[in-house]
Image (tube, rainbow, N blue to C red; front, side, top):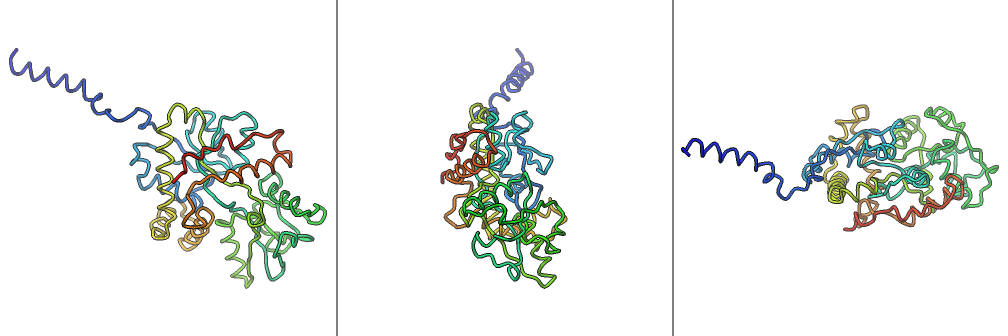
Length: 334
């Protein structure tokens, strides 16, 4: 065999072996293309999620992840069940309802340690120092929404009869609140709460917030979810995904990185000013990491069980679901 033929043979062998050798140390699941469906639109509330996708946190773990915007027409749980997404974000009531119907969904991380849903009101006109002070007030709720569930749980806990308050059906139009037809209006504290508060301030009025969480109603908000099948078939991928997401959120929420985080959000939310985004981020930080000792993503089992109890009491689910069995706390131990 001449030298040229030998060189061709060696080159051919190298080409054959290259895919094998280049994959050493990498399991196929680590290179999966993944879809992560959010619950909300791109804004300060999903800062860490878009931060992870924008600044290479997933790539550092060997993952290719498409972070998809949420919204009213999106349902992460359905997408997980249909295989259109491998990870998603859903509120606790969505998870519990789905589990009660047999969905194989599990929780990997709890994004909010305190529910951002609160009620804005004018403190100069409505003195509300304790839950019982809402008696006689017109309280806005979204019938069929989790704000209705939370408010009814609060009324029951403090022995306030429904005929002692006037429950007003709210929509996206805040006019009834501005016109003082409604005393307390449900808002997300880290989103509309800031915008509506600004409008009141410009009108020479003050704003305050009634927080059910501070009154003992622990109703869990958004959490990161996947399926039991995903954990069973791709355990390393799940670990790497949670690790990347946790690192990204911790960096995005760190006050030192506020400028970078605000700039990242502005790339996706061009309709909100940087000043408003900065204040939304500050409130989001307080709700997700209320103290330096708070472990981001930590799952509050007691709060989840209370959420299930509230839904059971209000007949939103037909029977207990033992939700604690779906909480994968092992992914958030630091």
